[in-house]
Image (cartoon, rainbow, N blue to C red; front, side, top):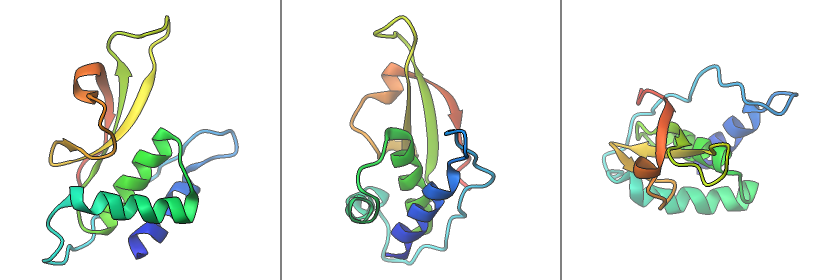
Length: 124
């Protein structure tokens, strides 16, 4: 579970002293072994390792963890940040999620329908 360990370290390294995030570079996509073909199948294993190593994470850290973990397993996952299209409160909320090949992997929320994407990383 090197991918879990590396992803946990990456998440821990992001937080600056003011409580914000500082991401200079995302983890590279490692060469994928031939037997790992399905990113969605890797998510439960990554989550299990995450819960054991770091407990429950906030939505941003969770999406960052999954992107870093999937990249460590050889999947070119992307990080996305979106703003509510129709806010439930006066100020719109933000939400982060992870995708691979256009499929949302970190949440079952209909993020493409309810959030306007404001930031996305490149797959590589």
